[in-house]
Image (tube, rainbow, N blue to C red; front, side, top):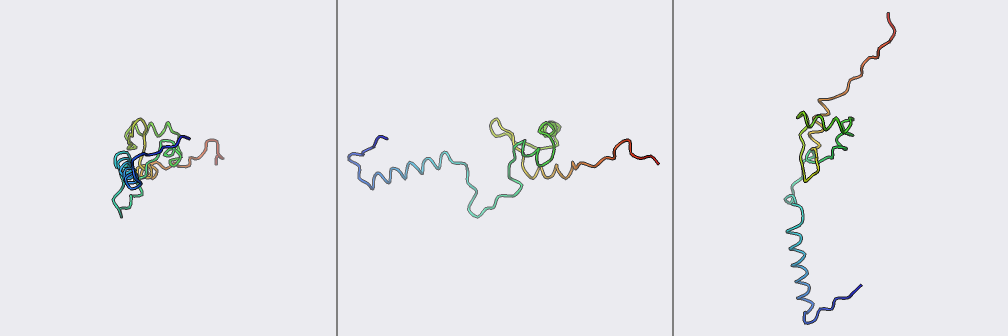
Length: 108
C-alpha cells in the first residue's frame, strides 16, 4: 500500500481538512435523517414485493395483480417497487382466506 506523506501541512490543518471533507460527504450523500427525538411510524417500513407476498400468504404475481387493480398502494424508488407495511397489513385484514368445504363429502 503506498504511503501518503503530506509536505508543508501541519497535523492540525490536515485534521481540519479531513473533517471538512467528511462533513461535506455526509451532508451531500447521506440519506435524510429523521429529526432528533422523532420516532418513525411502524407502518412506514417499506417491504419488497416478495416480502409483501409472504406476509399476505399469496404469490408475488397476486401482489402485482392487486397493485394493478389499485388494491395495494405502492411506491417506486428508482426501478424498484416497495409497499408500506401498514398498507400490507390493511390488505391482509381485507383479504383473509376462508376455508371451503370440499366436494364429495358425505351425503346425508
